[in-house]
Image 1 (cartoon, rainbow, N blue to C red):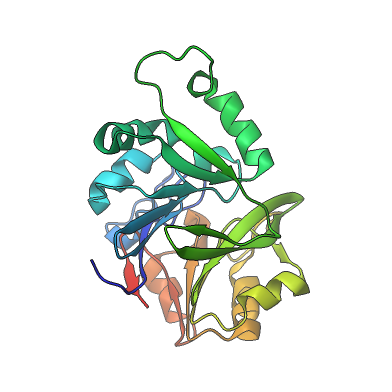
Image 2: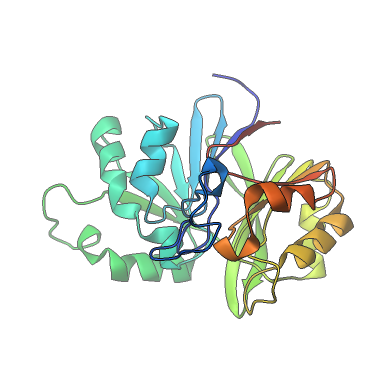
Length: 258
């Protein structure tokens, strides 16, 4: 395995994905595969370490499509269902690896997981339920997974605290519309910044395209990618033409190496 940091976008869509069920807009009806977006998630690889950030409803298919056969850890940004709903499918890794999956989550995410997947936390467990071992995390303390240092970044999704993560020169932030100056300092110096940009119109809990571009201009990474994209943003090919040279719209299965 390579000792370089490799990132694969497992999904780049918003909570309903793209296409949206029943929608007849030009994006949802597009034949361009870049306009098909599963729920947002990334696979981070270095050496023999495989880390996935968020397990949304598409987790099983995303792992199959990316050929993931080993999972070092599952890390959560926050508790919304488009980021947690697929956690049950870690059972496959339990079977392959013959041990619990290491899960890194804040107290609020752990509470949601215990509620949504109560059967995985019962004293008497039904055979075959997910086996996980939770490691508490918060925005104030970096943590390590198999020697890979991860620095949490506190952002806000309207009023909901969400964690972004910096790993070496790579920063990943999704579901945000507010970042304090002190947390911005954690991002500075990143060579690659991934940032959510839902659409062009104002939204209560997500950065718009322009807001994301303004933040990227302030941070000045070598390269930035936009994720958590909705069908309201427009077609991939059209939006791409509007962006600065160092900014691109991420797409499902895009792989980058640092």
